[in-house]
Length: 117
Length: 508
Image (cartoon, rainbow over all chains, first blue to last red; front, side, top):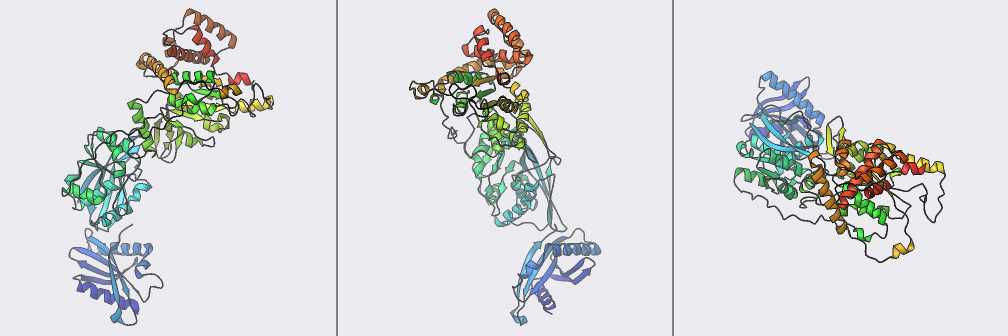
C-alpha cells in the first residue's frame, strides 16, 4: 500500500534528521498518530499523508480541521499515558508524493503545521 | 516565559489603557486570547501570527495565553495587534521583556508586518498621557493625531521589524515632530452675504446663533430656508480649544478624521437625510457608535423637511436636546456621548408649501395641514425657541445688487453677545442663554418696568404657558445681549414674542 510505504519513507527521513522515533501508529479510541518522535526536548507528532498525484489536491490539504482535532486529542492521550503534561509539543505534517517507483518519491516536511484550536 | 505590554482601546469617547499579559507554557501549541475580546481582537490572532513570521521573527511553538486587563471591559478594534505581537516576542525572549514596559503600542498589523492606522487614536493618546506613560508607538498614518493629543513622545515606525530593532536598541527611532497646525480642513463656509433679502430671517438666525437657540424655518419651497441654515455655522463663534478637542475626539472615534489634519477647527454641520433611522440619529450598534446628534456636538444639526422624518427619530431627539448628552444602552455596553448641538429645522407650512404665500394659492385642505403639522410632536416643538417664516422673494429682491452684511460682521456681534452670556452664566456652568433653566431665567433676566408691563399684557392675551413664558424671556435676553443691554427692554420682549414658536396655533 502506498500509505505504508509513505510512512516508512517519513520515518527514514526523520531518523536521518536526528529525530528519535518513540512510537509509530499510536492508536487510541480518538484516532491514530502516524509517528511520534523526539527532537531534542520537543515532542513531535507527525501526520504522514501520501499521494500519487495532486489531482485531488496536495497531501497536506487533506489534513482538515476535523483531522487536526483528532490528532491533538490523541496526542493528549499519549501525553497523559506517558505522564508528560509539561512537555513541549509540536504537530508536523509530512507530505509524500509517490510515483510508480519508490526511488522517485518526494517529501515535504511541514514543521509546526497546526496547533490546538 | 511571561511578558507584559501596554495597549489602549476606546470606551465611548474616552480611551482606556489596556494591559496585555502574555504567558507561554508547554503543552499543545495554540494561542488563546481572554479578557472579553470582540471579533476584531480575536482575529488579531491570525494577523499577529502572520506578521511575526513575515517580519522575519519566530512565532513560538508554545501554548500562548494572552490576557487583556482589565478583564471585565469589552475590547474592540484592531489596535491591540501590536501590543500582542510585541508581547509574544518578549515572552519568547526575542525582545528583552523589560524594554517594552516604557511604551504603549497602538496599531493594527498587516499580514506582512506593516503597521496600519486605526481610528480613535486621539482619545487613546490623551488617556495615555494622563496615565503617565511617556512613549507611544503608532502607525505612520496616525502619527500626527497621536502627537497632537498629549505630551508623550510618539514613534511611528513603518514595520514590526523597526519596532523590535528599536526595543532591542539596535536601530533607534526618532520621535515624530508635531506639524504646524494645518488649517486645510477649513472649508470655505458659504457666506451670509450671498443671501438676498430675507432681513427678518437673517435677524432671526443671528439671534439663534447668539443665544444657541434651536430654530425652525418655515416657508414655501425655494424660498431659501436651506440656504440660510447652511450659513449658520459661519456666524457661530469659533470653537474654543476645549470644544475643538471634544469634536476632534468624536470624529477620531467615528473614523472621520483624516491624518495630519490636527484639530477640527470648524463647527460641525450635520445634515442627515430624512430617511435616517433612530439608531443613526442618536447612535447605536452592538457596541454603540456615535450618531448624528453626537457628530453635531458643538455645532449645528440641520433637519431639512422636518415633518418627513419618522416620528420615532424626532422623538429620540428630545433627551439629547434637553441634557446635551445621549446615553445608549446595548447588551455589550452602556455609553454616554456628548450631544450639545443647535437644532435647526426647516419645513413647509403645509403639504403643498404655499400656505400664507402672497401670490400662490394653497391647495391643501384644513385637515391636510393639520395632519402635516401634527407629524411634529408638541414636546419637540416645545424645545424650539424661535420660529420664523421665510417668505418667497419678490423679483426686485432677488435681483437687488446692494451689498448684504457678510458673515464675518454678524459673527463679530454674535461673539460679543456670547461673551456677555458667558460672564453672566459661567457660575452656573452654562455658556448660552438657551441652556438656562427656570431658576437662571428668574435671576438673570431682569426686565425694565415697561417691558414687564408689555409681557404681562401678552401673557394674559396669548395664554402663554409657564414654559412659553420662560422661552420668550430667554430669547429676549439674547436680543438684549446682542444690543449690549443689561436690562431687557420692551423692544426686546416684543421681538422675542414675534419670534415665538407658534406654528401649532397658526395651523389650527
